[in-house]
Length: 448
Image (spheres, rainbow, N blue to C red):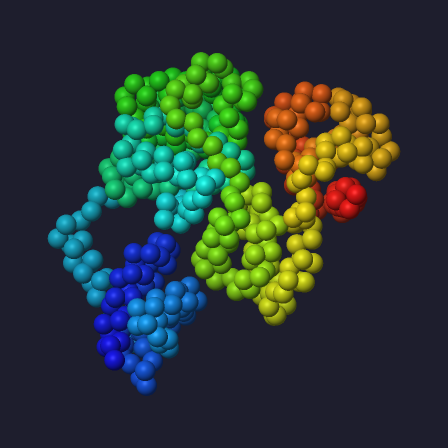
């Protein structure tokens, strides 16, 4: 019979290679504590580390150990305060002899990395392009614009670029900023010559500039002017620029042509909603990371039903996990359907049987307004709400893009359509009358 300590050493190496960074830190704290009646004993230096490691990594450890051994091996965790992980000691001695450069980049969120981004057919191009950029900042795909709807991973990829560069080139100066924060900083800098000088120096002397949500810059002419000059300065100095947007650059309104030209100069890549298989992989990873105990059949139901974005998927998982924790019982399919009834769009929808005309007709009848008013420009409160709901339902019940929905609504632009969708999303959980109207019209359309 193979020695359990040998099995653990091999399992430990595989786990450190395969697990996301958030879990690797717990594996490094484990020591082999011996064996008892065929059970592998793993020790940690405190009760806190023991409890946390059991919660976050038990399943992965048991699976890896059993896979290497070719048989099921029980694993027990114990506390041994006299033992400290050897790797930690080695790392400390290495730091004393050869201290690593300290990162100067404090704006990055370290939870985002390429390792914990699950790439599918919807995102493989963008994912691979971002890795190339991170490995060769300023020389490949510069500038780069990543665009797509909410919750599809734009920010994750953007900050993964920054974190990768920060890890491998800590001397590089990196700034991650949202377009809104950039705008607010610029406005504040206008108060004095010293501040404007400091602002320009901050953004024009970086190695990597990452700006999130540039659609926020629409109609902000002075900020666009400042970004234009910052962009030129960095680009001419071969510094890396990566931007994100919620739509293709051609669909942005109230952005100067010369700035649009700069954004189009490099690589433009889009993110699409993930396919079922990718959604399942993401859901399973989220459950592992957060310790959610959700049955496989329930996960399949969620991933078949939610095909919008990762944020909605994560919201459903959080809802069910919270329910199980508060009520104290596992989530069944029936419970999942009940708890997510206002969250999940029926999988039978999004087919050619439902048209935008049908949605407008049903919505007009529900609110007792004219169909042409819904398509028009009336600011009447009742008509405006009916218009928002019609647009929202068209976005979830049909396969039309937001631009196509806008054309069917008498040529409304992408921004207006997106506003309506987000407006209804934001009030569904807090306004019973709106939720009732949406569900009533939706059910009538689906059943019809």
